[in-house]
Length: 201
Length: 267
Image (cartoon, rainbow over all chains, first blue to last red):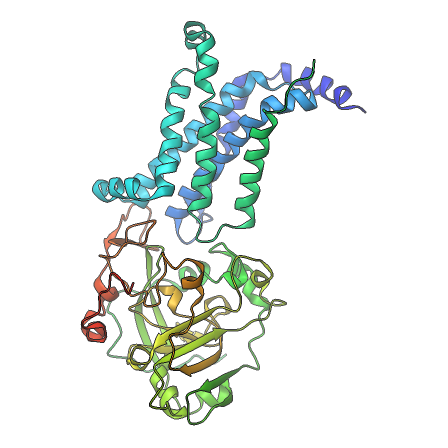
């Protein structure tokens, strides 16, 4: 079956899935983390376990969000109507990841946390990614799209540097960058690179 | 397996040790993988019997010593030590072992020897992490001779009355409680006495981040995080952080080793 032949029934089926289902399904990873925390499955160090898992989930949503446009262009798979949900879920998990760092990991030692933020490159990259995403999350509603017009699209290009900062933040916190780390970076670079492929008309 | 009856030690801390589960399921032992849980998952395949340690360099009696022969004359002690990882987490571990000085005195350290270099087993067939790049295997570490001779420095062969679990560095590993954990090299197969500062794995990988001395020091930050505080593993989700102690709380015993040294430069 051709790509288009396969994507047509999938697109048809997806049209019947309302986006609230995506929001709800997006909470499953959180439920999983909570479940692991209460059953001890989160590991010997629950603080790092929670913090790192939330960060990794956020990365999945960020990369998933980046994959939506190329998936439509090259696979004919239309997930555009779920992009807002995916993006907001990514933001939600980044906010949780950041809270886990500040509250559980840093133990709300605000002065040390702030000093670390400024001094440590990987933390600076992480917090920058979060800050870049704040206006995006804030304008993820129909009223903003109408009001901002063409500027809405321009504003949301910020997602590209944000994901880049996020993935580099993930790599730099490792003592030695692992194979998995390089795979994540490759995936992000590939998804960003695909946007540079000119459209042939 | 018979329980090891190790004698108590005046060097033990009063702090409550972490559980065996904590100590055996949260390990940095990159020979078995990058995650803290990888050693527990993959170290079971490591064969630690027979085991021998090659002792060479500036010693009177160099040779390849079987582990049994090394252990025969020693009296095992329990040393409950604070353990501080360079990643700013900590545990309390009831090690079983004997002073490294015991062994070094037995093999006879020659007067010119200034350093002790140590090496971990290189056996990729049983240590899957060694098939990955990133680190120039085998893992190597080292101490200055006075650090090696300090009574706090032990070779550990067990913990919690049991033989050393594989993921913690079986069958024999170094413990230097006033230094960051990566100095305490695991699964030792070679000890060399030398007059030159030996190369050490993490220092070679990231010289800016990991020095030769690697003394626990709350005033000297790691380039990527503060060392002023630490998280005690097992203390609970909302336990927060506790202040890190100079030389990990062993200042009285070891500060004199570094008199006159700039610990900011010699980190």
